[in-house]
Length: 189
Image (tube, rainbow, N blue to C red; front, side, top):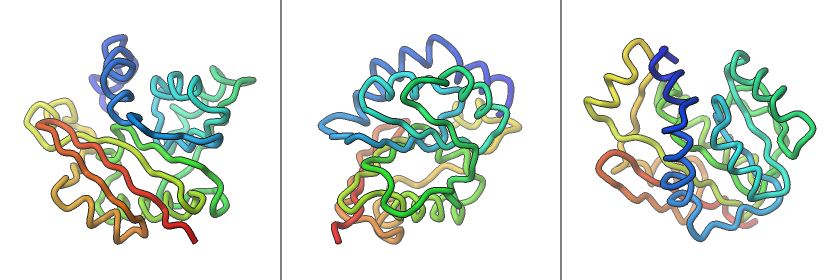
């Protein structure tokens, strides 16, 4: 992440947006269950809020420079931080009751790897488990925040099809001017 992005993702402004707008929107009417996978926690501001809503959170972070301090900060609580790649998750199949991806998918460097991450999320969810999340839509302000940084914005108009191709059912995509929410369920077996 570039410096602007690093600052923003640790800021009180972002924490307030997560607490008052983003997570209430993403988690509305969602039953998390006891074992939540957070994909791409970054510095962990959403993790701080999620851990209050469930018994256990496993936070999967690809960047060791972010994973290590997050693990140290949350040691001894109900969060386990794992450094690993979302496109090749180091978890057994059917391990989690719910998975959440909150404003991170655009940091995955290609559509191919994003789709692989979605397939992996489906694999590690229990049958009937829910994937919930949101991501940003492509816009000039988002591109400016990501100068010198990875930004592969997904097309919300095709995202339900991508979720279905990854193995999910009951895909829902709700589009807003600057972001989109998504939900999908691993089919019951």
